[in-house]
Length: 293
Image (tube, rainbow, N blue to C red):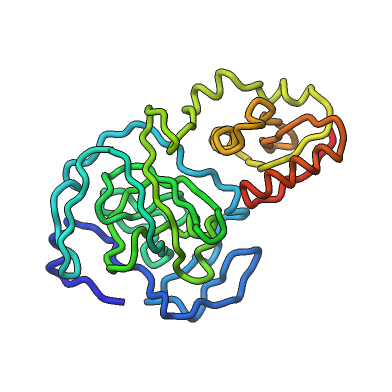
């Protein structure tokens, strides 16, 4: 782990995203509810917070949308003795490399884009991608994939490609080793490509059944996620329709007991539902819950 000099920090014009984690350090293996507890082994006392939100894996990915690029983040800069020339337009990008992550030590600090870093949001830092922009990050080893919004600069180690927020790293299975091999692919909002087939939330809302309507259809369903806020459930539905195109027409939101549940179905019998659950688990690395309603 190197430390950025004051000169480098000034050149970065306020970028707080320095090399966040030294993976030569060992991470504590103590966990609670699937989330690594804070403790020894984190570089410069970085790591997860004391009270992370429950069920992090169910937090929705970033939803790509058209946003103006920040001209202030297009200027060439130098960090740790290396020169970087940021991209000035959104264009196809695909690269493989090492992903690391940053946590509580930077939580609440300003990012290079001027936004406040939230370790529980689906964001990332990249040395040259436009700010803001969106990418799909895939863990090469386990196949897990997430969509994040790039709003920060870093990492600046020569062997690192992208720095993930704590939640993004958690969902990708990167936390345990501190880093992992990933593939990073740009998403270009508004353009059809293999990178992005997600409709905007407004389009989905106009074509999906309302929660009340979905409640009136009885049968056997698979629950993929449950949310206390409708917009979070709707964003999750958007991602599920993109990643599970074969069952996109059977996805819906059900409102019950104060929760908005994303369901797929109905199925004719439990055998068919279990077969579908197994296929979904292979694609998403999550375990659907079988429900009768």
